[in-house]
Image (cartoon, rainbow, N blue to C red; front, side, top):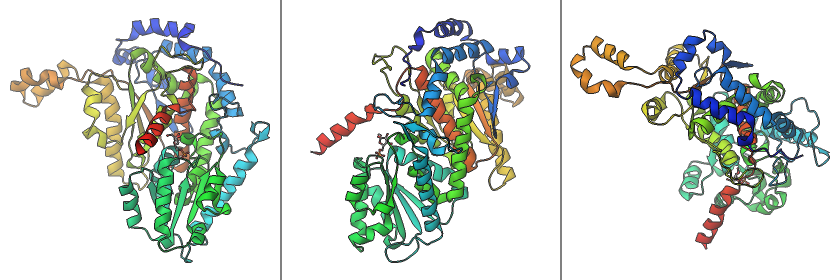
Length: 521
Ligand code: F6P
Protein backbone atom coordinates (compact mmCIF):
# COMPACT_ATOMS: atom_id res chain seq x y z
CA UNK A 1 0.00 0.00 0.00
CA UNK A 2 1.27 3.53 -0.74
CA UNK A 3 1.79 6.17 1.94
CA UNK A 4 -1.25 8.21 2.91
CA UNK A 5 -1.46 11.67 1.42
CA UNK A 6 -2.18 14.03 4.28
CA UNK A 7 -1.47 17.73 4.04
CA UNK A 8 0.19 18.50 7.40
CA UNK A 9 -0.96 22.12 7.41
CA UNK A 10 -4.60 20.99 7.39
CA UNK A 11 -4.27 19.04 10.64
CA UNK A 12 -5.47 20.32 14.01
CA UNK A 13 -2.02 19.92 15.50
CA UNK A 14 -0.51 22.21 12.86
CA UNK A 15 -3.02 24.90 13.82
CA UNK A 16 -2.23 24.29 17.49
CA UNK A 17 1.47 24.55 16.71
CA UNK A 18 0.88 27.80 14.84
CA UNK A 19 -0.89 29.33 17.87
CA UNK A 20 1.58 27.87 20.31
CA UNK A 21 4.47 29.28 18.28
CA UNK A 22 3.06 32.80 18.63
CA UNK A 23 3.09 32.36 22.39
CA UNK A 24 6.54 30.92 22.86
CA UNK A 25 8.61 32.25 19.98
CA UNK A 26 10.39 34.77 22.20
CA UNK A 27 10.63 32.66 25.32
CA UNK A 28 14.15 32.33 26.67
CA UNK A 29 15.43 28.81 27.24
CA UNK A 30 17.03 30.14 30.42
CA UNK A 31 13.56 30.92 31.76
CA UNK A 32 12.41 27.41 30.86
CA UNK A 33 15.35 25.87 32.73
CA UNK A 34 14.69 28.09 35.74
CA UNK A 35 11.05 27.02 35.83
CA UNK A 36 11.78 23.31 35.61
CA UNK A 37 14.57 21.73 37.62
CA UNK A 38 14.12 18.45 35.76
CA UNK A 39 14.21 19.96 32.29
CA UNK A 40 17.40 18.16 31.28
CA UNK A 41 15.94 14.78 32.30
CA UNK A 42 12.55 15.53 30.76
CA UNK A 43 14.12 16.38 27.42
CA UNK A 44 16.65 13.56 27.21
CA UNK A 45 16.52 10.21 25.46
CA UNK A 46 18.59 7.06 25.64
CA UNK A 47 19.30 4.42 23.11
CA UNK A 48 21.87 1.72 23.78
CA UNK A 49 25.19 3.64 24.05
CA UNK A 50 23.62 6.95 22.99
CA UNK A 51 22.46 9.77 25.29
CA UNK A 52 20.54 12.50 23.54
CA UNK A 53 20.07 15.77 25.38
CA UNK A 54 17.55 17.93 23.53
CA UNK A 55 16.79 20.22 26.48
CA UNK A 56 18.55 23.19 24.85
CA UNK A 57 15.75 23.70 22.35
CA UNK A 58 13.05 26.32 22.24
CA UNK A 59 10.39 23.85 23.23
CA UNK A 60 8.17 23.06 26.18
CA UNK A 61 6.25 19.91 27.03
CA UNK A 62 3.32 21.47 25.21
CA UNK A 63 5.41 21.92 22.05
CA UNK A 64 6.39 18.31 22.16
CA UNK A 65 2.81 17.24 22.71
CA UNK A 66 1.60 19.17 19.66
CA UNK A 67 4.47 17.81 17.56
CA UNK A 68 3.66 14.26 18.63
CA UNK A 69 0.04 14.92 17.73
CA UNK A 70 1.23 16.04 14.32
CA UNK A 71 3.09 12.73 13.89
CA UNK A 72 -0.09 10.88 14.83
CA UNK A 73 -2.38 12.96 12.65
CA UNK A 74 -0.13 12.44 9.64
CA UNK A 75 -0.27 8.69 10.38
CA UNK A 76 3.43 8.20 10.92
CA UNK A 77 2.92 4.80 12.57
CA UNK A 78 1.17 3.49 9.47
CA UNK A 79 3.99 4.89 7.30
CA UNK A 80 6.71 3.23 9.42
CA UNK A 81 5.04 -0.16 9.09
CA UNK A 82 4.73 0.23 5.33
CA UNK A 83 8.41 1.21 5.16
CA UNK A 84 9.55 -1.89 7.05
CA UNK A 85 7.30 -4.47 5.45
CA UNK A 86 8.27 -3.55 1.90
CA UNK A 87 5.18 -1.73 0.63
CA UNK A 88 5.87 0.29 -2.50
CA UNK A 89 6.14 3.61 -0.71
CA UNK A 90 8.48 4.97 -3.40
CA UNK A 91 5.35 5.42 -5.49
CA UNK A 92 6.78 7.61 -8.24
CA UNK A 93 9.35 4.93 -9.06
CA UNK A 94 7.02 2.03 -8.20
CA UNK A 95 9.46 0.57 -5.68
CA UNK A 96 9.70 -0.64 -2.11
CA UNK A 97 12.24 1.03 0.19
CA UNK A 98 14.06 -1.70 2.03
CA UNK A 99 17.51 -0.69 3.17
CA UNK A 100 16.34 -1.92 6.58
CA UNK A 101 16.08 -5.46 5.12
CA UNK A 102 19.82 -5.33 4.34
CA UNK A 103 20.58 -5.30 8.06
CA UNK A 104 17.66 -7.45 9.16
CA UNK A 105 19.59 -9.58 11.63
CA UNK A 106 16.79 -11.84 12.77
CA UNK A 107 16.30 -12.81 9.14
CA UNK A 108 12.48 -12.53 9.30
CA UNK A 109 10.95 -12.67 5.83
CA UNK A 110 10.29 -9.42 3.96
CA UNK A 111 8.31 -9.69 0.76
CA UNK A 112 8.52 -7.67 -2.43
CA UNK A 113 6.06 -8.70 -5.15
CA UNK A 114 5.37 -11.89 -3.24
CA UNK A 115 9.04 -12.90 -3.01
CA UNK A 116 11.01 -13.05 0.25
CA UNK A 117 14.10 -10.88 -0.29
CA UNK A 118 15.99 -12.02 2.81
CA UNK A 119 17.58 -15.19 1.30
CA UNK A 120 19.14 -13.05 -1.47
CA UNK A 121 20.36 -10.50 1.07
CA UNK A 122 22.00 -13.27 3.09
CA UNK A 123 23.54 -14.80 -0.02
CA UNK A 124 25.08 -11.47 -1.01
CA UNK A 125 26.38 -10.89 2.50
CA UNK A 126 27.97 -14.34 2.41
CA UNK A 127 29.61 -13.44 -0.89
CA UNK A 128 30.88 -10.15 0.56
CA UNK A 129 32.28 -12.03 3.55
CA UNK A 130 34.06 -14.67 1.46
CA UNK A 131 35.48 -12.16 -0.97
CA UNK A 132 36.61 -9.84 1.84
CA UNK A 133 38.41 -12.67 3.59
CA UNK A 134 40.10 -13.76 0.38
CA UNK A 135 41.36 -10.27 -0.40
CA UNK A 136 42.41 -9.47 3.16
CA UNK A 137 44.30 -12.72 3.69
CA UNK A 138 45.95 -12.50 0.28
CA UNK A 139 44.26 -15.51 -1.35
CA UNK A 140 42.65 -13.34 -4.01
CA UNK A 141 45.49 -12.16 -6.21
CA UNK A 142 45.93 -9.60 -8.96
CA UNK A 143 46.62 -10.58 -12.59
CA UNK A 144 50.32 -11.32 -12.06
CA UNK A 145 49.75 -13.39 -8.93
CA UNK A 146 50.61 -10.70 -6.38
CA UNK A 147 48.53 -9.95 -3.29
CA UNK A 148 46.17 -6.96 -3.34
CA UNK A 149 47.49 -3.91 -1.49
CA UNK A 150 45.14 -1.16 -2.71
CA UNK A 151 41.41 -0.88 -3.32
CA UNK A 152 39.88 1.84 -5.49
CA UNK A 153 36.15 2.51 -5.17
CA UNK A 154 34.80 4.00 -8.40
CA UNK A 155 31.30 5.49 -7.95
CA UNK A 156 29.48 8.72 -7.25
CA UNK A 157 26.66 9.97 -4.99
CA UNK A 158 25.34 7.08 -2.91
CA UNK A 159 27.90 4.79 -4.54
CA UNK A 160 30.68 6.94 -3.12
CA UNK A 161 29.68 9.19 -0.23
CA UNK A 162 28.52 6.41 2.08
CA UNK A 163 31.46 4.02 1.59
CA UNK A 164 33.92 6.91 1.66
CA UNK A 165 32.48 8.38 4.87
CA UNK A 166 32.32 5.04 6.68
CA UNK A 167 35.82 3.97 5.65
CA UNK A 168 37.19 7.29 6.88
CA UNK A 169 35.09 7.23 10.06
CA UNK A 170 36.25 3.72 10.95
CA UNK A 171 39.87 4.28 10.02
CA UNK A 172 40.89 3.10 13.49
CA UNK A 173 39.55 -0.37 12.62
CA UNK A 174 41.24 -0.54 9.21
CA UNK A 175 43.46 -3.37 8.03
CA UNK A 176 46.53 -3.18 5.75
CA UNK A 177 44.59 -2.43 2.54
CA UNK A 178 44.92 1.15 1.28
CA UNK A 179 41.63 2.56 0.06
CA UNK A 180 41.04 5.25 -2.54
CA UNK A 181 37.88 6.84 -3.94
CA UNK A 182 37.32 8.17 -7.44
CA UNK A 183 34.00 9.93 -7.96
CA UNK A 184 34.29 13.25 -9.78
CA UNK A 185 34.48 13.17 -13.57
CA UNK A 186 37.47 15.47 -13.23
CA UNK A 187 40.25 13.70 -15.16
CA UNK A 188 42.92 15.36 -13.08
CA UNK A 189 41.58 13.61 -10.00
CA UNK A 190 41.62 10.13 -11.50
CA UNK A 191 45.12 10.78 -12.86
CA UNK A 192 46.32 11.84 -9.42
CA UNK A 193 44.94 8.63 -7.90
CA UNK A 194 46.40 6.35 -10.58
CA UNK A 195 49.80 8.03 -10.37
CA UNK A 196 50.66 6.22 -7.16
CA UNK A 197 49.06 2.86 -7.88
CA UNK A 198 50.49 -0.43 -9.03
CA UNK A 199 48.29 -2.18 -11.63
CA UNK A 200 49.36 -5.59 -10.38
CA UNK A 201 48.26 -5.10 -6.78
CA UNK A 202 45.22 -2.84 -7.09
CA UNK A 203 41.62 -4.00 -6.94
CA UNK A 204 39.07 -1.75 -8.66
CA UNK A 205 35.52 -1.84 -7.30
CA UNK A 206 33.11 -0.22 -9.76
CA UNK A 207 29.94 0.72 -7.91
CA UNK A 208 26.93 1.90 -9.84
CA UNK A 209 23.38 0.85 -9.17
CA UNK A 210 22.36 1.69 -12.73
CA UNK A 211 25.75 1.29 -14.45
CA UNK A 212 24.75 4.20 -16.66
CA UNK A 213 26.15 7.09 -14.60
CA UNK A 214 28.39 9.25 -16.78
CA UNK A 215 30.98 10.02 -14.11
CA UNK A 216 31.42 6.42 -13.00
CA UNK A 217 31.53 4.91 -16.47
CA UNK A 218 33.97 7.53 -17.73
CA UNK A 219 36.28 6.98 -14.78
CA UNK A 220 35.96 3.20 -15.08
CA UNK A 221 36.81 3.30 -18.82
CA UNK A 222 39.81 5.56 -18.18
CA UNK A 223 41.05 3.21 -15.49
CA UNK A 224 40.48 0.16 -17.68
CA UNK A 225 42.50 1.79 -20.48
CA UNK A 226 45.31 2.51 -18.03
CA UNK A 227 45.15 -1.07 -16.73
CA UNK A 228 45.30 -2.49 -20.26
CA UNK A 229 48.55 -0.63 -20.93
CA UNK A 230 50.26 -3.59 -19.32
CA UNK A 231 47.51 -6.19 -18.88
CA UNK A 232 45.15 -8.00 -21.26
CA UNK A 233 41.33 -8.07 -21.45
CA UNK A 234 41.47 -11.51 -19.88
CA UNK A 235 43.23 -10.02 -16.84
CA UNK A 236 40.27 -7.76 -15.99
CA UNK A 237 38.71 -10.62 -14.03
CA UNK A 238 41.61 -10.50 -11.55
CA UNK A 239 41.60 -6.81 -10.77
CA UNK A 240 38.05 -5.56 -11.36
CA UNK A 241 34.80 -6.28 -9.54
CA UNK A 242 31.47 -4.45 -9.79
CA UNK A 243 28.39 -3.76 -7.70
CA UNK A 244 25.23 -3.09 -9.69
CA UNK A 245 21.65 -4.03 -10.53
CA UNK A 246 22.49 -3.88 -14.24
CA UNK A 247 24.20 -7.22 -14.81
CA UNK A 248 24.19 -7.02 -18.61
CA UNK A 249 26.02 -3.69 -18.69
CA UNK A 250 28.56 -4.89 -16.13
CA UNK A 251 29.29 -7.97 -18.21
CA UNK A 252 29.57 -5.74 -21.28
CA UNK A 253 32.34 -3.86 -19.48
CA UNK A 254 34.28 -7.12 -19.28
CA UNK A 255 33.78 -8.05 -15.65
CA UNK A 256 33.62 -11.77 -14.87
CA UNK A 257 30.23 -13.00 -13.68
CA UNK A 258 31.69 -14.24 -10.42
CA UNK A 259 33.04 -10.75 -9.73
CA UNK A 260 29.60 -9.13 -9.83
CA UNK A 261 27.87 -8.25 -6.57
CA UNK A 262 24.18 -7.72 -7.06
CA UNK A 263 21.91 -5.15 -5.48
CA UNK A 264 18.23 -4.51 -5.93
CA UNK A 265 15.98 -1.72 -7.15
CA UNK A 266 14.40 -1.53 -3.68
CA UNK A 267 17.63 -0.05 -2.33
CA UNK A 268 17.99 3.67 -3.01
CA UNK A 269 21.48 4.94 -3.91
CA UNK A 270 21.81 7.17 -0.85
CA UNK A 271 20.64 4.31 1.41
CA UNK A 272 22.78 1.64 -0.22
CA UNK A 273 25.95 1.43 1.86
CA UNK A 274 24.46 -1.52 3.75
CA UNK A 275 24.34 -3.56 0.54
CA UNK A 276 27.25 -4.68 -1.62
CA UNK A 277 27.78 -0.95 -2.24
CA UNK A 278 29.53 -1.23 1.12
CA UNK A 279 32.02 -3.77 -0.28
CA UNK A 280 34.89 -1.30 0.04
CA UNK A 281 33.91 -0.78 3.69
CA UNK A 282 34.03 -4.51 4.33
CA UNK A 283 37.38 -4.78 2.54
CA UNK A 284 38.82 -1.88 4.52
CA UNK A 285 37.70 -2.88 8.02
CA UNK A 286 37.16 -6.63 7.61
CA UNK A 287 33.86 -8.47 7.53
CA UNK A 288 33.38 -8.88 11.33
CA UNK A 289 33.47 -5.10 11.70
CA UNK A 290 31.15 -4.65 8.71
CA UNK A 291 28.77 -7.11 10.36
CA UNK A 292 28.89 -5.13 13.63
CA UNK A 293 28.14 -1.98 11.63
CA UNK A 294 25.02 -3.65 10.16
CA UNK A 295 23.99 -4.87 13.61
CA UNK A 296 24.17 -1.33 15.03
CA UNK A 297 21.89 -0.07 12.27
CA UNK A 298 19.53 -2.97 12.86
CA UNK A 299 19.30 -2.09 16.55
CA UNK A 300 18.34 1.46 15.62
CA UNK A 301 15.75 0.04 13.19
CA UNK A 302 14.17 -1.97 16.00
CA UNK A 303 14.16 1.06 18.27
CA UNK A 304 12.58 3.21 15.57
CA UNK A 305 9.93 0.66 14.64
CA UNK A 306 8.93 -0.36 18.17
CA UNK A 307 9.44 2.59 20.52
CA UNK A 308 6.60 4.99 21.38
CA UNK A 309 7.10 8.28 19.59
CA UNK A 310 7.86 10.32 22.72
CA UNK A 311 10.88 8.09 23.44
CA UNK A 312 11.83 7.45 19.85
CA UNK A 313 15.13 9.12 18.95
CA UNK A 314 14.70 9.58 15.17
CA UNK A 315 11.07 10.69 15.62
CA UNK A 316 11.86 13.29 18.28
CA UNK A 317 14.84 14.66 16.32
CA UNK A 318 12.70 14.91 13.19
CA UNK A 319 9.89 16.69 15.03
CA UNK A 320 12.24 19.24 16.57
CA UNK A 321 13.71 19.88 13.15
CA UNK A 322 10.20 20.41 11.71
CA UNK A 323 9.44 22.82 14.57
CA UNK A 324 12.33 25.08 13.56
CA UNK A 325 11.97 24.63 9.81
CA UNK A 326 8.22 25.19 9.58
CA UNK A 327 7.48 27.51 12.48
CA UNK A 328 10.65 29.46 13.24
CA UNK A 329 11.44 29.55 9.51
CA UNK A 330 15.02 28.36 9.90
CA UNK A 331 16.64 27.37 6.64
CA UNK A 332 19.48 25.11 7.65
CA UNK A 333 20.85 22.71 10.24
CA UNK A 334 24.47 22.16 11.10
CA UNK A 335 25.96 18.84 12.20
CA UNK A 336 29.20 19.00 14.16
CA UNK A 337 30.88 15.79 15.26
CA UNK A 338 33.64 16.19 17.84
CA UNK A 339 35.95 13.69 16.22
CA UNK A 340 38.10 14.14 13.16
CA UNK A 341 37.09 10.68 11.97
CA UNK A 342 33.59 11.96 11.15
CA UNK A 343 34.75 14.81 8.94
CA UNK A 344 32.82 13.36 5.97
CA UNK A 345 29.56 12.91 7.89
CA UNK A 346 28.10 16.23 6.72
CA UNK A 347 28.59 15.62 2.96
CA UNK A 348 27.01 12.18 3.44
CA UNK A 349 24.05 13.66 5.31
CA UNK A 350 23.69 16.32 2.63
CA UNK A 351 22.89 13.67 0.04
CA UNK A 352 20.81 11.63 2.46
CA UNK A 353 18.62 14.50 3.56
CA UNK A 354 18.70 16.97 0.69
CA UNK A 355 18.33 14.47 -2.17
CA UNK A 356 15.50 12.85 -0.21
CA UNK A 357 13.54 15.85 1.02
CA UNK A 358 14.46 18.62 -1.40
CA UNK A 359 10.99 18.45 -2.98
CA UNK A 360 8.32 21.07 -3.59
CA UNK A 361 5.46 18.91 -4.85
CA UNK A 362 3.47 16.86 -2.34
CA UNK A 363 2.25 13.28 -2.60
CA UNK A 364 -0.95 14.54 -4.24
CA UNK A 365 1.14 16.08 -7.00
CA UNK A 366 0.39 19.58 -5.75
CA UNK A 367 2.82 22.38 -5.07
CA UNK A 368 3.50 22.58 -1.35
CA UNK A 369 2.65 25.78 0.51
CA UNK A 370 5.13 25.17 3.31
CA UNK A 371 8.85 24.57 3.67
CA UNK A 372 10.28 21.07 3.17
CA UNK A 373 13.93 19.91 3.16
CA UNK A 374 16.53 21.71 5.21
CA UNK A 375 19.96 22.71 4.06
CA UNK A 376 22.42 20.45 5.88
CA UNK A 377 25.99 21.42 6.44
CA UNK A 378 28.79 20.96 8.92
CA UNK A 379 32.30 19.81 9.64
CA UNK A 380 34.28 18.55 12.58
CA UNK A 381 34.71 20.29 15.91
CA UNK A 382 36.93 21.97 17.00
CA UNK A 383 37.92 23.07 13.48
CA UNK A 384 34.56 24.72 12.88
CA UNK A 385 34.96 26.91 15.97
CA UNK A 386 37.74 28.67 14.08
CA UNK A 387 35.70 28.87 10.90
CA UNK A 388 31.91 29.22 10.68
CA UNK A 389 30.82 29.16 14.32
CA UNK A 390 31.03 32.96 14.51
CA UNK A 391 27.90 33.09 12.35
CA UNK A 392 26.10 30.45 14.40
CA UNK A 393 26.86 32.38 17.63
CA UNK A 394 26.36 35.96 16.54
CA UNK A 395 24.86 35.96 13.03
CA UNK A 396 21.29 36.97 12.22
CA UNK A 397 20.05 33.46 11.53
CA UNK A 398 18.90 30.75 13.89
CA UNK A 399 20.80 27.60 12.98
CA UNK A 400 19.91 24.52 15.03
CA UNK A 401 22.96 22.38 15.73
CA UNK A 402 23.52 18.67 16.29
CA UNK A 403 26.66 18.26 18.37
CA UNK A 404 27.95 14.69 18.31
CA UNK A 405 30.52 13.68 20.91
CA UNK A 406 32.12 10.49 22.19
CA UNK A 407 32.80 9.66 25.83
CA UNK A 408 35.97 7.74 25.00
CA UNK A 409 38.71 8.47 22.52
CA UNK A 410 40.04 5.54 20.54
CA UNK A 411 43.73 5.83 21.41
CA UNK A 412 43.06 6.95 24.99
CA UNK A 413 44.83 10.31 24.86
CA UNK A 414 43.08 11.76 27.90
CA UNK A 415 44.57 15.23 27.72
CA UNK A 416 43.37 15.79 24.15
CA UNK A 417 40.05 14.12 24.74
CA UNK A 418 39.22 16.20 27.80
CA UNK A 419 39.98 19.38 25.86
CA UNK A 420 37.97 18.15 22.86
CA UNK A 421 34.95 17.34 25.01
CA UNK A 422 35.25 20.54 27.01
CA UNK A 423 34.77 22.32 23.70
CA UNK A 424 31.82 20.08 22.81
CA UNK A 425 30.02 21.09 26.02
CA UNK A 426 31.17 24.70 25.85
CA UNK A 427 29.75 25.34 22.39
CA UNK A 428 26.27 24.13 23.36
CA UNK A 429 26.41 26.16 26.55
CA UNK A 430 27.57 29.32 24.76
CA UNK A 431 24.80 29.04 22.18
CA UNK A 432 22.22 28.49 24.91
CA UNK A 433 23.34 30.97 27.55
CA UNK A 434 25.03 33.66 25.48
CA UNK A 435 26.62 36.58 27.30
CA UNK A 436 24.50 39.51 28.47
CA UNK A 437 25.38 43.23 28.48
CA UNK A 438 25.90 43.03 32.25
CA UNK A 439 28.15 40.03 31.96
CA UNK A 440 30.26 41.61 29.23
CA UNK A 441 30.47 44.81 31.28
CA UNK A 442 31.67 42.98 34.38
CA UNK A 443 34.07 40.86 32.44
CA UNK A 444 35.70 43.84 30.74
CA UNK A 445 36.00 45.64 34.01
CA UNK A 446 37.54 42.60 35.65
CA UNK A 447 40.08 42.31 32.84
CA UNK A 448 41.01 45.98 33.21
CA UNK A 449 39.49 47.01 29.87
CA UNK A 450 37.24 49.69 31.43
CA UNK A 451 38.35 52.31 28.90
CA UNK A 452 37.15 50.13 25.98
CA UNK A 453 33.71 49.30 27.40
CA UNK A 454 31.84 52.06 25.57
CA UNK A 455 33.45 51.22 22.28
CA UNK A 456 33.34 47.39 22.33
CA UNK A 457 30.45 46.34 24.54
CA UNK A 458 27.77 45.73 21.86
CA UNK A 459 30.12 43.61 19.78
CA UNK A 460 30.91 41.32 22.67
CA UNK A 461 27.33 40.53 23.60
CA UNK A 462 25.97 37.08 22.69
CA UNK A 463 22.18 36.89 22.47
CA UNK A 464 22.14 33.19 23.31
CA UNK A 465 18.87 31.26 23.17
CA UNK A 466 20.25 29.38 20.17
CA UNK A 467 19.19 25.74 19.94
CA UNK A 468 21.22 22.55 19.84
CA UNK A 469 20.98 18.82 20.45
CA UNK A 470 23.86 17.05 22.18
CA UNK A 471 24.27 13.48 21.01
CA UNK A 472 26.73 11.77 23.31
CA UNK A 473 27.89 8.30 22.29
CA UNK A 474 30.10 6.01 24.33
CA UNK A 475 32.67 5.27 21.66
CA UNK A 476 33.14 5.49 17.89
CA UNK A 477 32.69 1.81 17.07
CA UNK A 478 31.34 0.11 13.92
CA UNK A 479 28.14 -0.72 15.80
CA UNK A 480 27.56 2.83 17.02
CA UNK A 481 28.34 4.36 13.63
CA UNK A 482 25.78 2.00 12.05
CA UNK A 483 23.20 3.17 14.58
CA UNK A 484 24.07 6.84 14.05
CA UNK A 485 23.63 6.64 10.28
CA UNK A 486 20.36 4.70 10.66
CA UNK A 487 19.19 7.36 13.11
CA UNK A 488 19.63 10.07 10.46
CA UNK A 489 18.05 7.86 7.77
CA UNK A 490 14.91 7.47 9.89
CA UNK A 491 14.88 11.14 10.84
CA UNK A 492 14.86 11.92 7.10
CA UNK A 493 12.04 9.43 6.57
CA UNK A 494 9.87 10.90 9.34
CA UNK A 495 10.27 14.40 7.92
CA UNK A 496 9.32 13.26 4.43
CA UNK A 497 6.22 11.46 5.75
CA UNK A 498 5.04 14.52 7.68
CA UNK A 499 5.80 16.94 4.84
CA UNK A 500 3.70 14.67 2.59
CA UNK A 501 6.45 14.40 -0.02
CA UNK A 502 8.15 11.47 -1.74
CA UNK A 503 11.57 11.07 -0.14
CA UNK A 504 12.87 8.23 -2.27
CA UNK A 505 12.95 9.60 -5.81
CA UNK A 506 15.36 12.23 -7.14
CA UNK A 507 14.00 13.62 -10.38
CA UNK A 508 15.68 16.91 -9.55
CA UNK A 509 19.08 15.58 -10.58
CA UNK A 510 17.96 14.64 -14.11
CA UNK A 511 17.73 17.98 -15.89
CA UNK A 512 21.36 18.84 -15.24
CA UNK A 513 22.42 15.42 -16.57
CA UNK A 514 20.36 15.91 -19.76
CA UNK A 515 21.73 19.38 -20.37
CA UNK A 516 25.32 18.27 -19.73
CA UNK A 517 24.87 15.73 -22.54
CA UNK A 518 23.55 18.46 -24.85
CA UNK A 519 26.47 20.73 -24.01
CA UNK A 520 28.81 17.82 -24.63
CA UNK A 521 27.41 17.38 -28.13
O1 F6P B 1 22.68 11.85 -8.02
C1 F6P B 1 21.73 11.01 -8.53
C2 F6P B 1 22.02 9.57 -8.27
O2 F6P B 1 21.05 8.81 -8.92
C3 F6P B 1 22.08 9.21 -6.79
O3 F6P B 1 20.84 9.04 -6.21
C4 F6P B 1 22.93 7.99 -6.81
O4 F6P B 1 23.41 7.68 -5.55
C5 F6P B 1 24.00 8.43 -7.79
O5 F6P B 1 23.29 9.18 -8.76
C6 F6P B 1 24.80 7.33 -8.43
O6 F6P B 1 24.01 6.45 -9.18
P1 F6P B 1 24.54 5.04 -9.62
O7 F6P B 1 24.86 4.24 -8.42
O8 F6P B 1 23.42 4.43 -10.43
O9 F6P B 1 25.76 5.24 -10.47
